[in-house]
Amino acid sequence: MKQYFFILLVFLASCAPTKLSNKSAGEQLVIETQSFDKPLTYMEVAKNFEGNETRSIISAELLLKGIDFAFDGIKSAIKKGAERYYQEYAVSLYNNTFYSQNSTLGTLDPENIKFKGFVITRSVELEDGRDVALTASFSMDESKYIDIYTQSKFYLKCDSININYSKVKMNAKKWFTPWTWFMKVQEKINLDLEMDILANWIDESGSIHKQESFGKFFFPIRDFTVGNKDTTYTNIPIGGYCYLPPRSAAFCMSSRGQWEKCYGQGDFDIIAKITESSKNNKLNKVIFDNISILEEVDAQPIKDLLNK
Image (cartoon, rainbow, N blue to C red; front, side):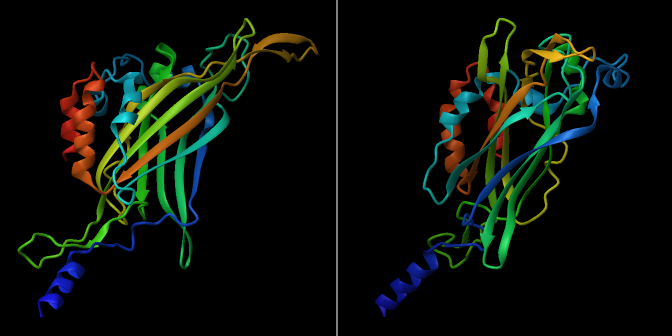
C-alpha cells in the first residue's frame, strides 16, 4: 500500500508542460523593418513641436535613466538556469537603409528618414501546421521626434506584443505545497528583449566602419499571460536610444551627367536577443545580485518593475 501511495505522490508532484509551452519545433525567427508612408522631414516634425520642445517626463525614461550603452552588462547578468525554463534566442537583419534618398549635405543629414520601426516574429511547427508563437512590434517614438533634429538620436516604443506559445516549459500541474493536494497551473512567463542597432559607413577620409554600436534598447516584461492578447504594453516607451546611422561618403551622378560628392542612405543592422523565463524568482535574483554592474543607475526602479 505504501508503494502505491509513493507512486501517486510522484505522479502528482511531477510537472507536465502546458499545451502552450515547450514549442520550438521548426522554429523560424524573422525581423522585418517598417517604413513611413512619407519620409520624415524636419518641417513636418517641427510644426508639431512649436513652443513645446521641452519633452514631458516619461516614466519609462526615468526608469532606465543613465543606463544608456551600459546595457551590455545586463547580458552577463541574465544567466540561463535549467534549459527547459530559460531560453535565449537571437535574430538579426543586415543591410537596411535608414534614409529614403542620398544627401548632398553631410553624413548626419537627418532629412527624409524612411525607417519607422521593425517587427520580430517567431513561428513554430505544430501538429496541425505552422503558427506564430511570438510577435513584437516596435516603432520610433513620435513624442520624441524633435530629438532627431536637436540631438541626432531617436527612441523606440512598443506598439504591441503577443505570445501565443512559449519556448520555455510552463508547468500544467505540480505539487503546490507538501501538505495539500492542490494543483497550480502556470500561465505566465517573463520576457527580456535586448535590441542593438549597428551602423556601417565610409567616412570622408575613406575609412570603413563596420557594425559600430549606435543604439541599444532593453525591454523587460514580467508576468505575461501566454495565449491571451495583452494590451498592457501597447504604445509604451522602452529603455534606451539610438543615434542616427551615418551616411557613407560617396560620389553620385548628377542630373547634369557629372560625378558629384554625395552621402548615402545610412546602412544599419538590427540584432535582437530574447530571453524567456518561466522561473520568475530565480531570474530576478540573478539580476539583483549583478545589478551593481550598472554603477550609474538607480537600481531600485528596475527592481520594483521586476517584482510586479
